[in-house]
Amino acid sequence: MRHRPEENPPIVVGVDGSSSAAGAARWAAREAARRGAPLEVMTRAHEAVPLLIAASRRAALLVVSDRGLGRVAGLTAHAECPVVVVRGEQPSGNDGPVVVGVDGSQLSEAALAFAFEAADLREALLIAVHAWSSSALDGGLVPLLSWDDVETGEHPLLAEWLAGWSEKYPDVVVQRVVVRDRPAHAVIEQATAAAARLVVVGSHGRGGATALGSVSQSVLHHAPCPVAVVRPERTLR
Image (cartoon, helix red, strand yellow):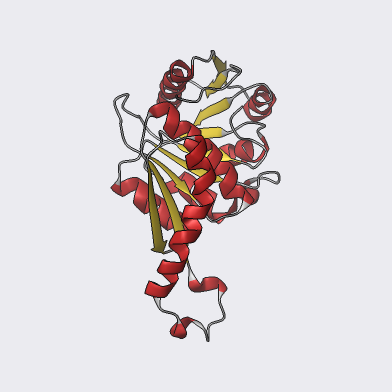
């Protein structure tokens, strides 16, 4: 059985008359229909970000276009629900996968909750991407490492991080990907190669654009599809 939210808080979309905002409105309308949720359209004004943040306190999801990414970063850092940033026009028939970055942290756990829910609602493949990098290691250790050995050790970790969610959403088919790469680049590469319909990333939030972290900021700027930004306390309701 497909999981559905017990309550139906609205999908809120901000529009400002631009073509990119119109694309966000169409995406939000399809999402509201998919969830059986009400759709609320807010016309942006001079104080658009505070108004949208206030609306997020009662929303299941806040949807905006990528126009003015500086303001978007402030919105995603303070909104009280997940925020989807729609990049460009998205065809209604896009049947690509949902892509999510996973690293075992509390942030990626929140992203996984959203991603599994999104994939379940769409009956879509979920690609879980775990990127390993030697940048955090002592430089003297790097030449001693074998990527084959690292990869062998990282796959069971990824499977462990996903296990509970796969039990909750047994209908979601998951493709596990472990790569040696920078996390943002790995997620963007997988989303591009698979023609993803949605990318999900975690964010600390609170504190403006820098609180999003380099991964979230990079994905917001370069992903080929809509991006959902989720903080630990902001999973789907």
